[in-house]
Amino acid sequence: MNTIQKIWKGSPNFWTGRKGYKPELVVIHIMDGTLFGTDAWFANPASQVSAHYGIGKSGEIHQYVKEEDAAWHAGRVDAPSSKLIKTNVNPNLYTIGIEHEGKPEDKWTDAMKQASALLIREICQRWQIPIDRNHIIGHYEIYSKKPNCPSHDKKIINELVALANGQTSNQQSTISSVVEEGIKKIEEGLAIIKQTLK
Ligand SMILES: [Zn+2]
Image 1 (spheres, rainbow, N blue to C red):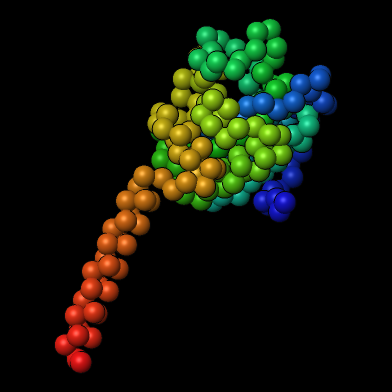
Image 2 (spheres, helix red, strand yellow):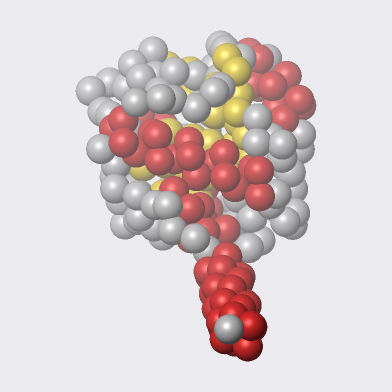
């Protein structure tokens, strides 16, 4: 399988291995800042935080921690709404974390969404994780005290799941049906012209 391009920016903030667990969920985060700032924050041992990946608005992907190891991105559990959160197990042990550049109120760029969807698909194929809304979750679904991670717009995660499954979004399929309709009309017009020229 061809893997998508990532830039390695190793962080010191992780546990080696996963204490017998394996990745079962992908957790979507917002950086609440820039990719550059996140690189520096995750490189700093004093921050005590990291994620496996960070994606910039340009679609550039940085990797901070190997998927085999546990990054420190979702260690706290508070009133989880996800049904797949285990009791008394640190979620960092069975999740892969992806950070996204920007603020919770930002509209995500297409490049960032596409890169995220490709990365999600690759991770899910590697670890046999179903690409659905139960397994691709927002940080807020583990830790209710971060209600806006990854976004004010909770539909963004549905959109990533649809893109990762290779479906076009509703908006895109509306556009393509409009285009198809236009092409049909042009073809009908050409047929009439051809008839007239005979
Ligand atoms: Zn988060």
